[in-house]
Length: 461
Image (tube, rainbow, N blue to C red; front, top):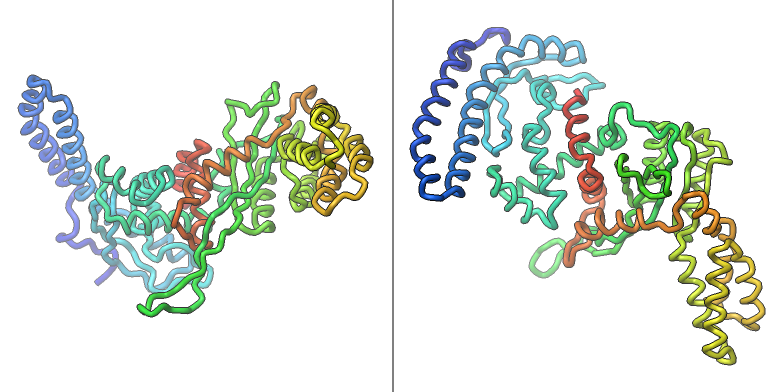
């Protein structure tokens, strides 16, 4: 039988579908109106709202169950032609089932590519690509599921929230669909989803901050316990997070610009992701770029060279050590001073050291400590070397005068909200390859870019 022949059992005319839908809507609403009015008369607004919401979901389900199969048959010829143009062979029509926003399953007819070409990508069900179905879920469903899973502290809470607002799924489906969505976003490229179409950093003052969080992972090594269950190692790992912020004229994050977060476990991977974002955002046209971080050498050894490689003029790059980290070392140096240095002198040293630190004179702290500590231990030596090595990054008075940031609060906040509050829960062990992709969903949500990601996904075919 030709794939172009439409079976009467599977389709109906547009006129029949329309009339059937209109009849159902009219009957459903008219049969409920009197009851809703009575609820309101009795003062039961809650039951009225619940009933109306449930009715609207029922209408949504009915329209989808009637309209989607009808329209799917109308686009078969077009999709077959596109599939063949993309290298697909032996294309046949098969049933295709997916879930819509309420969790209801809908069965339609879809061209299926039995023999894809070598360069084929995406689902073999051509209708899945045409309608942007991911993991057997419609865009509205994976939008809801991903949003709730990224927002809540667990999949169980996400499952409860979805049920509360009309999406019926089992708990495992919530987890699996979230993972499939994260996989899809990872494969497509985060920088292609997180940004607005014409978003740029041109003529803007930009802050880039990097730091590490903590997530406990699970690694299977093939061992089993006495009950025959697989055993795994639970190593704490450090995901590296970056944030790109646009600064206003006062040196604070602009309320008119949204932050951009990216996260990976390996240093090379997070730097690669950061570079892709910066290239797409035209960082070479930025007015000024400030790099913020703690004392981790890999940050300073890589980000400025990356910016130079992206054609950012060195005169427009400012490197800044987080003031809180630097002041901690100052406090530690004073606390560990020899006993011959009394409390009053220690207070005086602390006041003087903090004043020097703020004014960018960390070198004077280093010289004074060499006088105080006749035989410094390894720990004290490390603290002194830390301040000595980062003298050029501690010009806090200059930063303040030029309306730049002195601390790395923007990344500390990101670590807490994106990583710790969702992926550092007690007795929670994540597979590295899974959680690394889930960071993106959480980052998209908390940066208020979730809708942008969903719109870009819908335009990705």
